[in-house]
Amino acid sequence: MTVARAIERALPGRQLIYFGDLARTPYGNKSADAILEYSVQNTQFLIDHGATVVVVACNSASSVAPEYLRQRFSLPIIEVIRPAIELALAEPKTKRIGIIGTTATIRSGIYEQQLKQLAPDVEVYSQACPLLVPLVEEGWTRRQETKMIVRRYLQPLRQRAIDTLVLGCTHYPLLKHIIQPRIGRRVRIIDSSEAVAKTLASVALPDYSLAAPASGERNRFFVSDWTPAAAKTAQGIFGRPVELVKV
Amino acid sequence: MTVARAIERALPGRQLIYFGDLARTPYGNKSADAILEYSVQNTQFLIDHGATVVVVACNSASSVAPEYLRQRFSLPIIEVIRPAIELALAEPKTKRIGIIGTTATIRSGIYEQQLKQLAPDVEVYSQACPLLVPLVEEGWTRRQETKMIVRRYLQPLRQRAIDTLVLGCTHYPLLKHIIQPRIGRRVRIIDSSEAVAKTLASVALPDYSLAAPASGERNRFFVSDWTPAAAKTAQGIFGRPVELVKV
Image 1 (cartoon, rainbow over the protein chains, first blue to last red):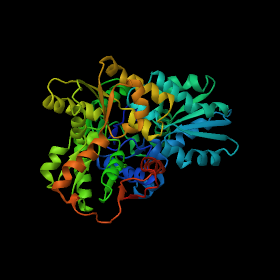
Image 2: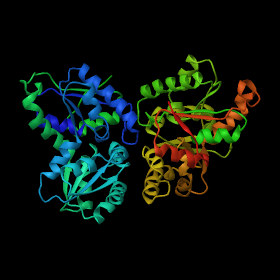
Image 3: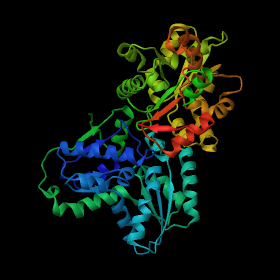
Image 4: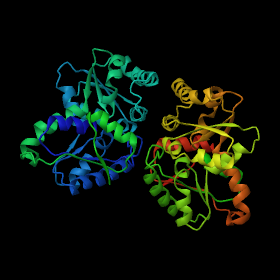
């Protein structure tokens, strides 16, 4: 939802078709095989509902699925990892990058691989933070316990004196206000939701049908399960009531 | 897994067929509709693999699915809620019962309903504890943060001066050592995994094929997703390496 919101802001004239797989989330502690299977199904759903560009708006899915999806589907697949990496490296002073994400994302090693390809001299340190997704989903974004857990997770990265921290999970922007003081005020934080919206606006638009005039159709939000908590989270992120349609 | 372990101990001569829906868990923050659908599929899987009695070894599923499963399937369906309630009420001094569970279980109100039916004079207080499942699944069963979160969740029940606390989630027995001192040493804790094993041994055995002589077949453990974390959890609960077969 954080990515959908950022895209909505960056491309206000385009129709957004959102699918949240709430019946099977969280993905971050599941195997690569399971995440790949769900990603194929979710992509097919979006195509069936008219999508002409698909954004894999989840780091866990982006860490295992994009190549396979590109082989299988013929439309552009935008993922959230490369844009975040490019945004991190766009600042020439970047030398020591920390990555935080779910177990699945960190275990994949994809941030290290891509960063080493693009910038062999940059040091990369990663840290899985599996409890942050449940804490965000419970709305515990200002609690003392959450601050303690964030401090514990960030401690190894603080010791490495990183200059840049990539929020490698689309839930983490909702914790940015407690991550920033604990990692240090001088550390630059990269929000992948903003990065992917910029990529979509600047890269995808010239080539694909997203560049077509606005259709005037309103955005649609589908979910595979509906709960009051999900509706509340959506309202918090979008700043308005959002109708989540269960499919 | 805590229920499977308790059943294995209580009925060592019987073959156990376990299915853990790790590709879709946790259930506790999903809707009743989603949990019901998954429960039907999981029951069918167990029947297809030879089960003659099915234990719904999850409070979230037990809070919404048993009646529907009993209408749809003709074999005995044992759930985990009634046995825990009966164990709680077996002690005549029980007057003020606290229930802790997932959001789905507490939202269902099933503990209150069944307790009020069986013992109208007993006071019942319930508290959803949605973060305890992720904390257990991360293995944070001795961390300071977990103790603080448990204290926060139990605070309303402490104020009610309960005499009995039902662990209304099969993950919670793994936190019993930190729950007991925080709810008070004099509060009796009811572990539904032990309660259901007792029910299965004393109630189901005389009537059904579980009472047949031991088949000599070894127990089988199926999961819908396999991760290193799941294998480690299984080894911790069973006290031996357990082969989790992905299906």
